[in-house]
Image 1 (tube, rainbow, N blue to C red):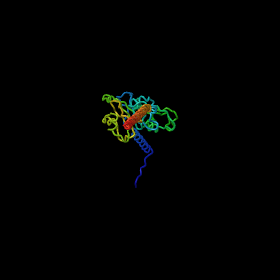
Image 2: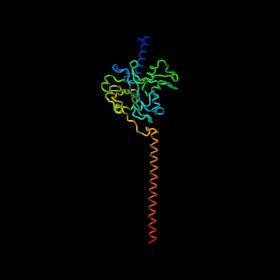
Image 3: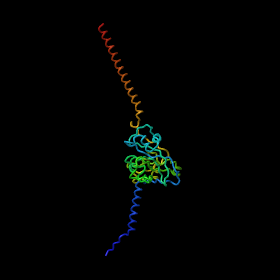
Length: 283
């Protein structure tokens, strides 16, 4: 006769706890694959940069983006190699300066954000801050607030992933570790070329397995001078107006000169024709 062994209540509790911890571990790994712990030999804080992608409808102006990060639009324009009054175009890459520091052995740039109507942590982290943070980190950074019932106008901390260079990296000439959210169609060659980074340093610093929509670190020796789009959309209206006026005046002047020239040639020909006719009649 077969004997059926049923697990005791303590065994069931142990199995349930193991499954819960495994699920939490897998979830944490999925949300952050690159190591953002504070290096032992790194400074307690540093000035670094995160990337931000201009998106319609609300984030196609430096003013709105600077308000989101609570910094000046001039600091973003200088870092991003654009004019402060430039009109942004969708998917334009910007560099946003932030102060990175250690919080419980994790590196974050803590940004203050005021809760708006219908806001929740997943929306704030994934849409507004474009996965530079995640909802779990926001919950940990704001333990006094109920994540399911955020009060209007409440100030919350959005901890953006970042990291300061270690002493070894500083000795190699690496000045910044730029936080960049990896896209599904990205590859190391294109991204390293865009930011002037070493492919080897990028591969050493990050784990690119299933890294889509997750933050990674781009080690650079100098702040990259981004190649910004030169479309008409990137020219401000204040600069367009003089150009339009100049073109209009030039065109009008050309038309007037051409008209007067044609009239002069016509009159000259008629004068010659009349003279020839008069001479013929005299003969």
